[in-house]
Length: 187
Image 1 (cartoon, rainbow, N blue to C red):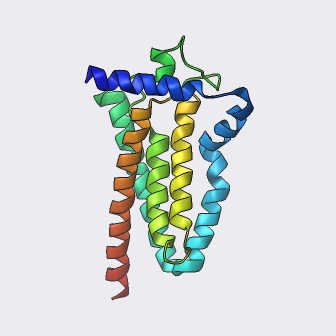
Image 2: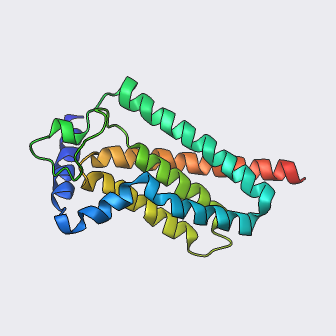
Image 3: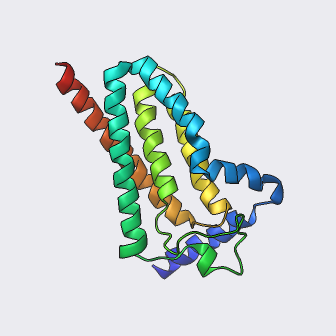
């Protein structure tokens, strides 16, 4: 386990060290959860246009449930179970911290990476047969959000990778639940 943690630290320092002031504002924009509101609005509009009112309402309800679950699980791991500190606390003298605060001390695992990947997988599955590249574009968006957490200095790559895996699993699970509910309600 020590070797894995050291690898995670080394990879973090390498990736975080690639940052430059030229790109800081771009990655801060990508990591800002409120900056994604226009994307959410576009997704909601596309869901409505492609799925109709009833199925869009089911999708929105499942997204809300999914985000609550992923947030709660991430918080449990961060503050109750593993208590691994963020790199900006553990490696304060080596981190290139882009913003002026580090966040809570708990860092494992990234709620940003989890939530964005869950949303990308879920909505990508809903839209992929209607919009050819939607699933790929949403996946790339989630990857960028995850990388932004390393870039700005607040998460290790392992935090982000775990978030991606858990988020993808939740996205698939909620998509299966969506399929079940739509089938039950329309037959």
